[in-house]
Length: 87
Image (cartoon, rainbow, N blue to C red; front, side):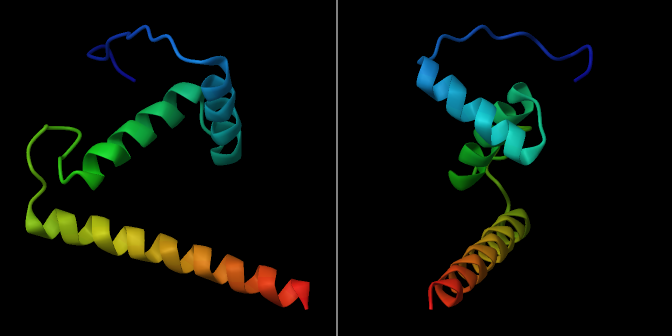
């Protein structure tokens, strides 16, 4: 974070905070970084560039879609490994 960042106080249910902290630990990020990444991803899914608030151009959107596709392949691979281990 730099000097242009602002603080934002937020109330949330304790269980949600615990889930964020657990996810942050798995991702090796701070809780703040975890929340920011997840917020940015939610804007990207809507086709909005989180940095500018502008619609994502076709080229950037293609990159986001390729990234999501790659993540899906990883999940599929993990599921395959899990299935093989059940046999």
